[in-house]
Length: 403
Image (cartoon, rainbow, N blue to C red; front, side, top):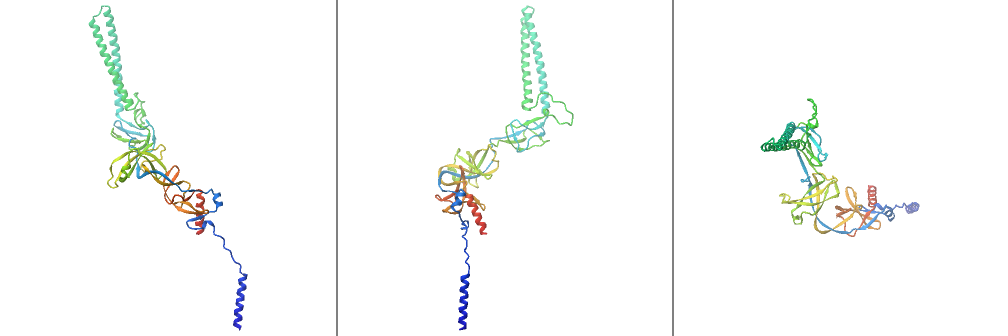
């Protein structure tokens, strides 16, 4: 009896405690924490964040051949600057990487050719002066003989002899003028120094520019190579500088043998480099190689590229997309659609009115402000094309909350 009363009392006590207990209501999980690959976003937040969704569409684009290669200088546009005569470099006035203009002095050189050429010119000038003086004297003699002949005081033979002497002196003067001009041109055009004597300078002083041969840039461009320093002794066969015009470069693409039937000179190509991955440099194939590389079984295709902005640099690695004719389907999305999360490109695909899937994608070409999606999307899917940064923010908040 006592045992039954104890059990009853314990039951009543338990019932009383149950009626006095306060139940705790768990709050709803936030929408952004809905799953590892999905994000929740209310209609109000979508409207405030400017989220816009469009159906993924397939475009028909020209078929392209992709080939890797490098960018060398345009072999049709370099200039190799050498010395015109033997001598010693006294001053170097340009460095590698400098932009030089046509006719700019790159260095100055001392040479014995200067003194010899000036001596030849001085002698030619003196010979010319003597020839002119002789011609004047013979002209007066001829005129006197003619007057005497008219007065019957000289014979016709004397007049003819005077005419012959005048002809000879005129020929000598013409020859002297030619020698003088050749000596002058040698100084001015070949050696590029003034014909006049330079100002005297004492031993140990720096030689004036007028007494040194200038080495000039034959064209405007960029100085790629400098092979001399002050004091270098050079010969006419020595290559002193290399200048090239970087406004036009080549891209040498290695195209697979199987694509050889699709190649021809004149095909347009778009070239991409790592420094500007989303900026294509447009050019055309100007030459195809004559033989295949024995190890890679590829043929060289030369693409000529305008480079007026100077962004392309020699020896860059590059990828060419060559339009080979025909068409192929491709998916392109606006550049505002993808975001980078954890070092990977992702897009957001709407699965319901307030649910968005995080989808990794592989990006290919860039065309007219759009990005090609090589892998990760299908036609017809509802893609967030604007406001994707808001979804990225929600995704990051969700990840932080989960930690």
